[in-house]
Amino acid sequence: MTSEDTTRTEDGPPAEDPEAVERALRAGLEDFELSEEDRALLDVDGPALGDGDDDGPQPVVAVVGRPNVGKSTFVNRVLGRREAVVEDVPGVTRDRVAYDAEWTTRRFTLVDTGGWEVDATGIHLRVAEQAEIAVELADAVMFVVDATVGSTDDDEAVVRLLRRSGKPVVLVANKVDDERTEADAAALWNLGLGQPWPVSALHGRGSGDVLDALLDVLPEVSQVAAYAPGGPRRVALLGRPNVGKSSMLNKLTGTDRVVVDDVAGTTRDPVDEVVELKGRTWRFVDTAGIRRRVHQTRGADFYASLRTQTALEKAEVAVVLVDASDTVAEQDVRVIQQVIDAGRALVIAYNKWDLTDEERRHFLEREIERDLVQVPWAPRVNVSARTGRHLERLVPALDTALESWDSRIPTGRLNAFLGEVVAAHPHPVRGGKQPRILFATQAGTRPPRFVLFASGFIEAGYRRFVERRLREEFGFEGTPIEISVRVREKRRRR
Image (cartoon, rainbow, N blue to C red; front, top):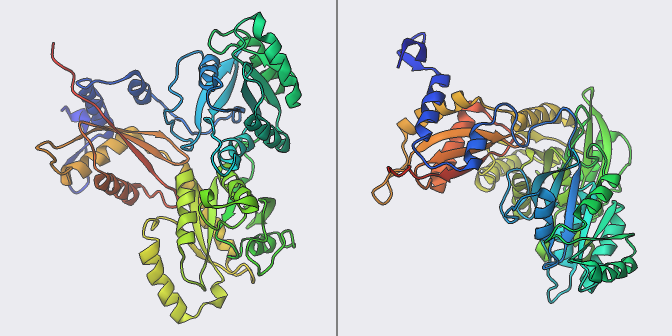
């Protein structure tokens, strides 16, 4: 190591230059088997996946359809390459996979929602999960139907969802492999979605025409993205029923914008409202209270829960209200976990603070230490939605969480820090081997996502240790952190 590779600290020995550390570790990676995807990730310079776009977010297209209608084949045809549609992509939810697509120089995001099944209790559960949320978050929908089978009861149930959404729909009549089956496609006019476009996803027949039809209804910039650049930051108000979400929104707006009642579950649909708070404009969304797991709900509560999830995915930061006057419940923990799973910034507001005495506050602190131990990094604000007490304190908490959500660590500094951590606390030896972290890079923001290249499996406990040390060093107050590990083998000597 030359003198250029070191910097001397004021009171101690020379410290390694972060950029020199990065160069050395990158060189060491050449001894390991790396895929094209690995190299693309390592070559990222500047904003990565999930970062902002100065030209505005590109439009989003949801592809929906039953299983076995050739939807995955159609997605691959649009992409122009074979893609494993079940592969997870960073920054999207587990039940939907997003890809960057392009047609005649127009770029858009293609979201494959997977198929759905009719179960013993009816189609509602699967259709709503796979179609309704995806459609709500899209600018346009491509509805794929098997023309050789014709419309089924499942297809018609989805049509009703599409009509309610008001989104433009392009009807793809798939498996029209030759002129003889074009009559089958024409029969799909009876779905009432307009012209069915005959396509053979397998052979590519008609795919250009249907993509031209898509571009005719697709906006230049997404109208449903989390936020438009420069626009108000989007804040979702979440919490279990009757925790005071609607009261808070009414107090923030200074109006009776939302119906408030002591009966839990008054709010059904998300309510958007532009709020002026400490001289800044915010877009708050009041949501239905989350009663239980979505799979266990039925009827109106079921759809309210789905719309709450949709509102969360459209937001950038969530304010989760917890009733300070009542015991912290399992539902509170579940709502907070829902925010973490969605990858949104998080602020916890302990509401009804005016109804708590010293004894209650003592027990509340113990409950927080016991039940909310997984989110010590979330900013905390004690408020009263009824009186308006300390609502202005939401602003610095929101700013802190959003700043962390957007933050990026230089690769050199990240690796220099992790090198010190690993040297002081190496991974435990398992099976006679000690896995090493070879290199680390930040794959994206919103939330911060890190990829660790390692020589062996990194245990969950050690990943949590790395996350804790990252938070101690770089802050990340108010945002979840995603850490994934790629295990790579050494190249075999020939």
